[in-house]
Image (cartoon, rainbow over all chains, first blue to last red; front, side):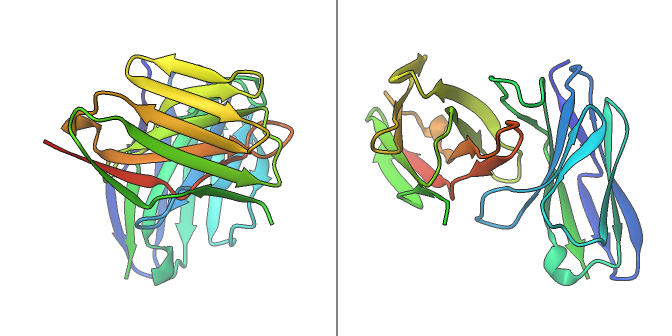
Length: 115
Length: 113
């Protein structure tokens, strides 16, 4: 299984809602990532988990809360988002945190719209 | 400031020709550089990685060069096909731990039949 899966594919939420994005991989990768991508822009790194521990938080607002329950799962909890948070949220994984050959495998993304 | 720039936002070429995409960076000394392909509404897909001690890397119709003196990588697709139409992103790891992947702005390639 060489896939990263993300659910849901699409999500529409109001500014007062609480929702969660989910990501799963079964490749035995020990690093997992969340990226945010706006239209016609490159992906921007939000969070990095290495061996299930949060290692990088790229100054992301606290309304985004990541969680790594185990080595295969990654969640992104959303609360009190703003319309400008509407974007494609991408999850990725790589084999060896800090390894010398660290290609990232991306999921298909969740298209989030905040009303 | 640190920058990764891809010179063209868009590149249109005729089928069968060679597409050449450019990635320039400043203020980094990366150990390696990666190229990804992204189709609309989908996540990026890894294509090639080239290390600082490698001048050139090939995979089927793809070729990547890496000039650490010029701080530039060139990405070539030979015998291009309409199916090669996509956005191509170069990416560098910018931290010592090797986890912080930073992307260039991307080049949207359109191959016309």
